[in-house]
Length: 114
Length: 115
Image 1 (tube, each protein chain N blue to C red):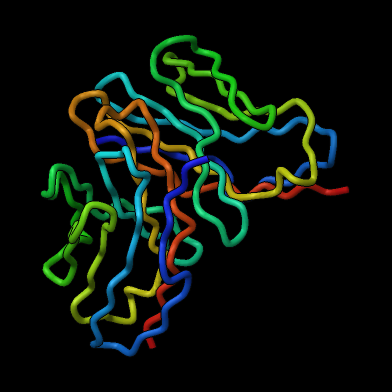
Image 2: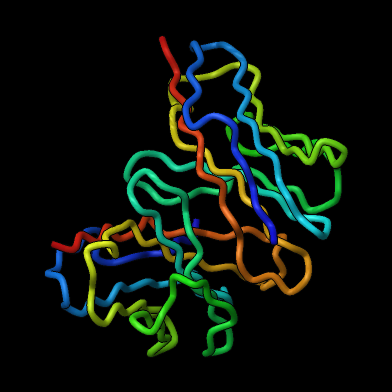
């Protein structure tokens, strides 16, 4: 069975600092991996996805994530945090073989301090 | 940009009552999903739907739940007899293809409160 583990339910950074949100996955087959962002009272928005092309994936709003098979990780980073980045971030995995569903991690809430 | 639209945004219902949550997926999308998020918890898969039938469902999606695509545009989730533990945010999503690499477009959700 597939799963994702997000390390840290809350992360707090200062504006302008590096953002690092951690995600480790478990999958018996090569996975597709996603990061979604949820702003307060809104739905989930796709930030970026890994689908076996380049291991470093760039997304919207300056975010990027690197797929590391050896570490079964897909951590999300942004060089310089902005106040508007404050939100809940979800790592997600789906399989490549007829998988209609996506499994989400528990989420990491990012706080950005002025 | 195309959107997935969900109505109502908030619904309060009494325990034991039936509720129908409505979704209008993106018009050229073929695959539809319902997820739920209990307050403070993870987003959980409920069901996927393609070609007018359920493709996959989770253990949460028991006999109290049903989905329907009554016309060419709406996709509904019905809960027959609501329980307190059904209180959650319910998200509809759609995707153009069933291949898992595409990612979903989510609606803004319906907050269901069962009292």
